[in-house]
Length: 158
Image 1 (cartoon, rainbow, N blue to C red):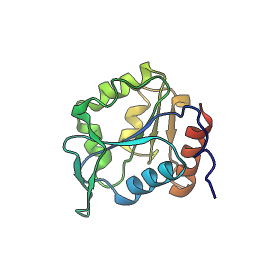
Image 2: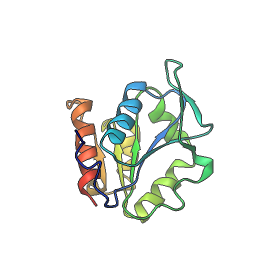
Image 3: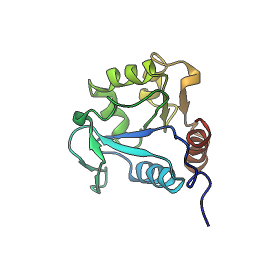
Image 4: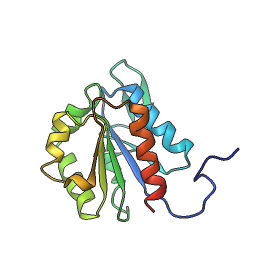
């Protein structure tokens, strides 16, 4: 049985998930798994080294590091996912390279998704992006529904 979208040959929205040490395993692994299961291109991007450790000490090898400039050749309309669980939200917020990256995504008419719409990172995003170019995870909604909505957006946006 093929999954919807997997066998279609049209271009898909490129998606990226930005992770730093102290991330929440469930958020990151679940998001990557669901996107790849749906046949969507998603790259995990670490802030520093490719080997990133969760708040529980679980190591994940990211597809690339931010220093490798994975966003340089990205066309318009990409999706940048910012998981805020664990310490990742604050780590992303404090990294000086993240704000210019967000500006680049905005210039290329991309979208940003945040896994906690009540986080400090989400409030910072509201200063850069309009409401139509951000996707915030409401606290009362289960993560599974939020991820399903993101994958649907990525499947049908192109």
